[in-house]
Amino acid sequence: MTIKELCEKLGMKVLSGEAFIERQIKGVYCCDLLSWVMSHAKKHDAWITIHTNVNVPAVAVMADVSCVIIPENIEVEKNTIEKAEKNEVVILSTDLPAAEASRHILELLDKQGN
Image 1 (cartoon, rainbow, N blue to C red):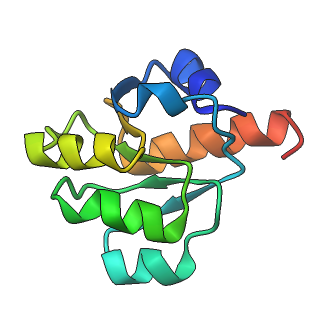
Image 2: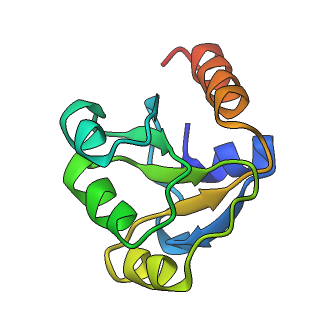
């Protein structure tokens, strides 16, 4: 499933990296401990976190995730969005809680056979 398809199906808003929404999502990873994400998230995961600071795009690049999803309409810092744009990181926003977003993504991936 692409990031674009995910946004369309779950009504997520693209905050940064719109040029890269055709990237594939193959899994989902929920974690707020940045060092843990760097060592445990898998390539092509959609990473769900409540963190919105400027370190998030750097971790996303190092972990090679497809996108970052910020749940519950948490406001993302302007400098984080700017850094994400510079580093080609897609950041999405959703009104869903993290667990619910994760469940929906896994269901969508399962339907597509991923």
